Every structure is written in structure tokens, then in C-alpha cells.
Length: 261
Image 1 (cartoon, rainbow, N blue to C red):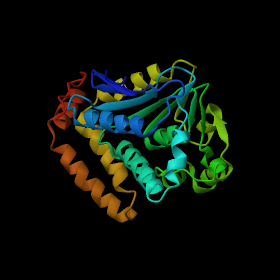
Image 2 (image 1 turned 120 degrees about the horizontal axis):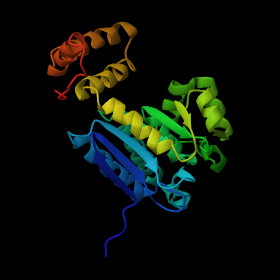
Image 3 (image 1 turned 180 degrees about the vertical axis):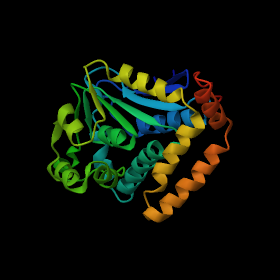
């Protein structure tokens, strides 16, 4: 008898929804991480998918973090490195997915759950959302790029406060410091994320992808170099069929009919 999947995905109208479904807290152990990686691979390869939403089953937990019961194994030679590398691979996949990613945060997003949220492009938090990186309380610190992406997202000083203190913050504080893009009513995180995803998916898929490419291109190079990359990418966009359709639709005062090419 095959095991029930811990991570599932569906797709409709250009939007994929990946759901962490590992009761009772949607934790990300080795198997769940592998399944999430597999779902991301499928969503990336599906040409009909233009936006990806990641959420957790239920309202109490988006994801309570990694399986802490697996941590003692990580203290053995080589095991800790393997754990860190798998976590980094997963978060890089989310961060570098060539399509926009939106995290719908319901309830607790702790440790690895918070890292998934940080790696996404956008975060929609329900009013009952609680976010934090409590790893320091276990004598370690968050891998998966947490020490690198969080400071870039909310600033180094505030990131250090969360990393050093291991404290959990609510949705209002997350929004105030830039960790959440929007706060919505409890129970509405997924539907709001899907609505936003549908809006983005209605635009030219290549133009949206190349917008993300242009933003990310400036991360590791100088402003001068990133501006040059922006020109190169924009030149590519201008040559696409969707650009001509967008311009013509505007001039003809009608909605554009993008064909995503």
C-alpha cells in the first residue's frame, strides 16, 4: 500500500497550488521536503502554469518547521551538512523558480515554514499567522538561506533581532517590518493568494517571468551592471508577440489577449 502524499499540487487557469499536508502541524521532514521539491519541479516544467501558490492544509499551521525528531541524527558526522544542503536546495528552488511564487500563510509558520515563506516572492498572511525562526533556542540557527534572505528582505538589524532572539511575531508585526505583503481575515489567505495569482497569470507569462529575472539579476552585481542586464532583458521582451498585442490593445481600447509568447 502506497503512503499518502505529504505535499500535493493542483493547477488550473495558469495557477498552481502546492499544499503542505502533513498533519497535525504540516512539518517538513526529509520525505516532505523531497515531495515539495518534486512538486516544484512539476510546476516549473508545466508550461500552462504561470504562478505558483504555496500553502498549508488547515487553519492552525502553515508549517511548524522541520521534524525536530530528525535533528539528533544531524549531529553525526556528515549528517548535519546533508540536512543543510537539502534545505538550501529546496529554498533556492522556491527563490529561483522562473515563475512568481506566493505564500499563503495560515497559522504558524516557524523554522523551515518561515524559510519557505521568506523564499517566496510574495507573502499573504492571515490575521492568525505567527512567524518566527526559533532555531537558536535549540542551539543551532536556521539554514536554508535564512541568514541571507531575511536580512535582504527586512534589513539586517531587524533580521538579527529575529535570528538572535528566536521570537515569534504576529501578522501585524510581520506586515509592519515587510515580512508580509498583506494581512487578510483568518481563513482567507489561500483565496486571496489565488486571486492575486490569477491577476498575475492574466498578464503575459514571459513578461512576468522576465520581470522576476530582471529583479533577481541585480542581487549580486553592481547597479551599473544590473541596469545593463535590465536593458538586455527588456530588449528581449519587446521582441515578443505579447508586447505587440499589449500595445495594440491599449491603442484600440480593448483588453489584451496575451498568448504567452
